[in-house]
Every structure is written in C-alpha cells, then in structure tokens.
Image 1 (cartoon, rainbow, N blue to C red):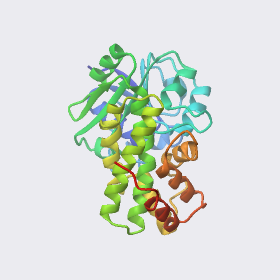
Image 2: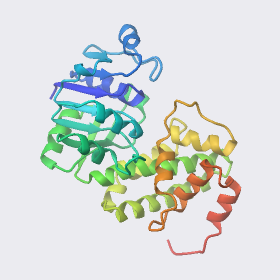
Image 3: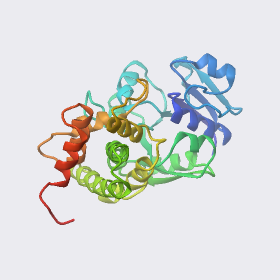
Amino acid sequence: MTGRIDIIGAGAFGTALAITYAKAGHAVTLFARDGAEAMGRLGENTRRLPGHAFPAGLRVTADRGDLTADLALLALPTQCLGAFLATTPLGADMLVSCAKGIDRATGLGPSALIARHSTAAVAQLTGPSFAVDIAAGLPTALTLACADDRAGRALQDRLSTPMLRLYRSTDVLGAELGGALKNVVAIAAGAVVGAGYGESARAALMTRGLAEMTRLAVALGAQEATLRGLSGLGDLILTCGSDKSRNFRFGMALARGESLAADITVEGLHTAREIAGRPDLDTPIADAVAALADGRADLATIADGLLNRPLKSE
C-alpha cells in the first residue's frame, strides 16, 4: 500500500526512512529545517547520511506549508519535539514518533507529548536500527506501537516494506521506555569498553541493564514482555554492541576524557538525568551515568560502588 508520507526531521534516521519509503513507491516529503535547498540540488544528505542518493519520489522542503499528507513521521530529537509541535499545527490523521527519550521539560514520552498538541492517532516506531542500514536496504525489524490496534494494523500494512518488517504492539509506553532506557545502558556500556574493563563486564552490564530497564518500565505501567522484544532487548543489543551508536560513543568518550561534536544528539544523557536519583526508583546504572556525565564521580569510584553493593539474588 503506497501513498503520501511526510517525514519531519532530516537527520540520519529521518533521511533513511525517506529514502526507504520513496524507494517503496510512496510520495515522500522530507522536511529539513536547514539545508533543504542543498539536499534537493545534490540529491543527497551529505551532512547526515552521505553516500545514499535520493530516489525519485523524494522531495525535500523547508516550507512547513508543504506538510499536507495524511500520515507524518516525526523523526525529531525528543528535546526538540515539543517546541516543533507547539509552533507547527499538523493536519495529518496519523502521527508516528520516531524519537527515543524523555522530554526533560515535561517528563513525557514522545506519544504523550504529541497528544498534547494533536488529536491525530499516535504511534511509536522504535527498535534496533541504524540509519545507514535502513538507507542501504538491509533487513531490519522494528516495533510499531499504537494503542488503537485497528489504526496500528493500518499503519503496519502501510509502513512495512520487503526489507523493513514491522511488528505491532499496543504497549506504547513500554515501546517508548525501551527505546529511551536502552540509551542510558548504552552510555554505560560505552564507558565500560572505553575504560578497558573487558567484554565480560560489558555482558554483565547489558544483562543488569535490561533488568533495570524492565523494573523501571513495569513500575511506570509498561508490560514486562515489551522489554523483551525489539524495542527493549533488541535495541539494547544493537546499541551496546556498536560504535555506530551515538550513546555508546559518548560513553566511550566519557571514559577516555574526550568529547563528541556539539551537534551530536545523546538522548541517553537526558534520560539518565531525568530518572536518576528518584527515591521511588531503583536505578543504579542510570544514577551512575548521570553522576559520571555531570562530573560528580569518576569512573573508578562508580565502578567500585556498583561492584561492592550488597549481594543479592538475580
């Protein structure tokens, strides 16, 4: 099933989705706040996704008035999503968030943030995926979460392609939290690798990280099974195992006393700061990430504290 799709946000992920859906026969409008003219002229996003040419059927625009499709994918960082929606009324019947994180200004996830500004059906697209893999047409599977199962089925049919397989869920909160919380664990995994603590330590960190993610998500109202799926465990495996992940690279940089470029989004840091230190939540890994990033403790002290907590059952 093909049709018109607006994709808002011309970062690597938004660009990759635009390429994928244009290749699948959809008429795609990609909204870029900056650089739209150059992308249209060059037929490529040389800044965010170089080497992947735009197919026919993909139009780039900086004019918000061009966003007229009935389906819009919001591929904006979580911390930018609220401000965009507040200034840009969208007429789409269906809005799909591709963001992973928690908005620090409101404490809301992407779907709740969208619902504040729109009465459209809202869904969350999330799971283990790197933009370069999607743009290259490599096999990828994601979670499409929509509380309205009928709307979710329609979106699943419309947005699945031969190489992009979507699995449906009605647990929007669980899918969002999986995508947000795995970024925190990815920072910690990057720090473990950057410090030279070894692969055994990374495996332990990932396993205990999944336990922390699940414990927190269930406490906030998510379904435990969702965290064992693509949006939780699947995304965790990918993000903690590759330096293609911005959050993983950020953790490595923290451990080595380095920094990333200022324009690189690290959603896991915002999420860690949002949940760290809450007395009602047991989040030692998120607490550690926030402390390390904010300079309140060094990595050796944090590792010693985590390893020497009271022993307990698994």
